[in-house]
Picture 1: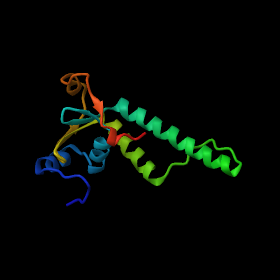
Picture 2: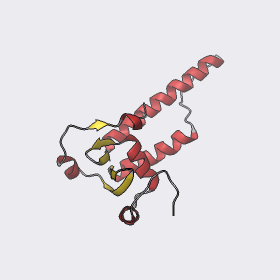
Picture 3: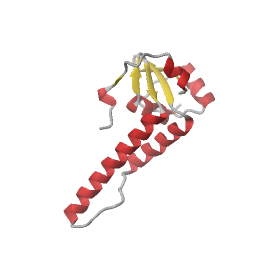
Picture 4: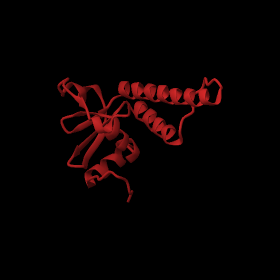
Length: 134
């Protein structure tokens, strides 16, 4: 089996394989998603906002490094980890978002986000501060 920092039930393994959801996508949804009850939701709008924040952060770091060297920077330089996260986040956005259900550090299931899932929850959600990017 896969060795990740993510513990999943047999049901979760079965469903994610059926639905074409990778463990890296689940991990990023748990890291950056909005927590509503026991679900971490990462919809496409949030993914694009997160990608924009990552781009601004990388550009800021690139400009600081360039100023120290006495040069000007116009293109952000991404770290390899940031590039891989951005690639997976774009995959999540292309799929239409992702929902991961987690209870007690154990993933129960994961499924694709649709607007009908969003309607069943109250608008009162919060972002887990431990899992924020910025």
